[in-house]
Length: 388
Length: 135
Image (cartoon, rainbow over all chains, first blue to last red; front, side, top):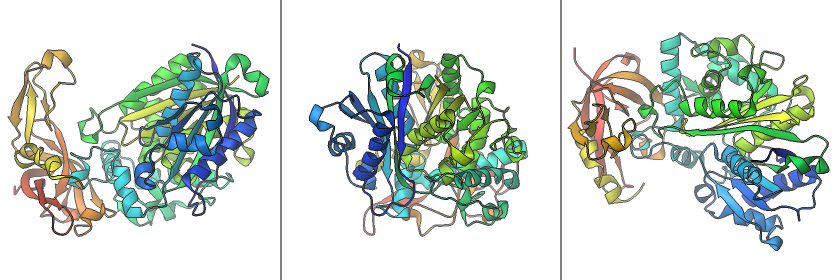
């Protein structure tokens, strides 16, 4: 297997982009990444697109070929492949693209992630998100995606004595970081009281414990390490890539407070990179709900099981803390256009490793991690990125 | 949300809590599966039908405020994960109790209730929900 580098990054602003279609945001991010890599586009050997549910959000399937078409890539008839693993679709597209370059099959590959969610109403979005769960044994009985995360939250509070006040540290930090990110959906800081007093979605989860519905796209360009320097002075190496699965239904898991898929994916990625979790300086974790970031801190190994809420509320995950988490604002405040999220996480880590993160820059960041989850944890994908 | 066969084929488990027990390791699963995730090939042909007792206790719960459109009339409703006496966990609603009276560890029993309907004039779907056991 060859070493692989990210040589270009691009993203759109995340938010309710009423005037942009899926194909337009996909291309905007892709062109930004191609420009950033300093390539013409003719060098591209293949395109991968992470997308959860264009069929239900905009009634359009076959979106990889569509985006290749509008990106002007059909001239060379390159392979264009859509990749789906619900919330982890973006990271899975990145991993598939990474494997295709590492294997030697392709040299230059563009990987995009895109979702256009706001063409349908909130109730339809609730139904579409629920398709990432077990339809027959969860959704049919009235479970929604936030309700399952709410049950994790309540059980966590019961077992470890954590409080909603401690939990507020996650969205408060992520909003503070997003305020410094020009591409974020919510560029404003919030107070703990805002989180505590928000309308309930599924108690104990309120509105500010849940990532928003968003439109957006992000893209990266990959190349084998041996030629990466030809295109950029600052290639970022994909040092580790891990993917794992677990039961689709939350109630089938060994422990609803441990995402085993995250444990296995993180272990594999760190081992491949030859790194210890303590080497990681900056991480983008899958905070689709507040409890998700807490569990991810524990399951990756930044802190032991049951200590995540306390660790977070003591400020250790802020920029300048022990491990800077979700400097982009995370899914909560940068926004969560589902298929784009996994790629946007990699874009943020590359910005950090290049020293291009502006006001939210983590000093001396050289090693970063991304963590993307599908459903309630049936798929998890972890990447380790390093300054080459 | 789907066709008649999609619901009809799951009726044995939704009406009577039919699960399976792996004759190789003794573990119980619900809903039924053909292969034991622990014993793999050793379990083929040894997954035996087992009707759950319907008794269990609340493992976790939430009050759902933001629901699917098909549950609009019910909201807010209590959703729970119930740990059955046989050891498996099941997700469904808790009924006949005020939200403030629900707690982790509360004893519950399964009862058959209407789960939903196909639009305004379509067929009705039934299955288990849970209610508190009078102690």
